[in-house]
Image (cartoon, rainbow, N blue to C red; front, side, top):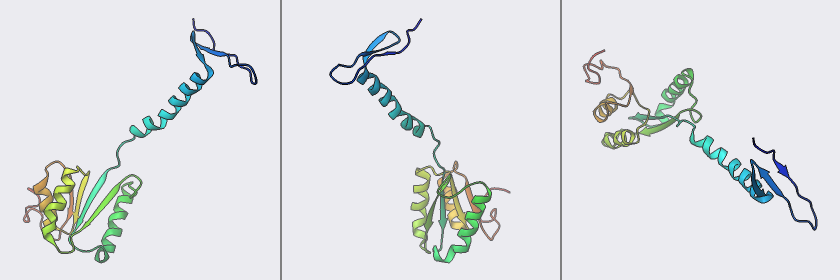
Length: 156
């Protein structure tokens, strides 16, 4: 049978009494330090248990200025699927600005960091580079030609 918490202390010239918690005697300062330390750890534990926010690697062959309508449509699609950029999904935009030599390095970086999805709208080259670099990360692409003929997919 455990004993109740007993706290005796006075203020002024008298020294503080002791706390008895489950039969263990401790000073009031020790008790407050123990409780304060436990309370300080709660936010750290809670933060560590939150799931990671998924990252979408968005690769576009053009420039950001030339793709404002495409980005607006992409964000609208994310919203309709229940995602809000910066809240429960992070989108990393990579603009090649016509420099396709950068494509392998961009795709390799995204694969090494294990993004949740690689999006390559209107870029057959981006879809093919992503397909070559990974077999595990989903690739979302949009092309104007037949993806099977372009070797983006094996079959439909």
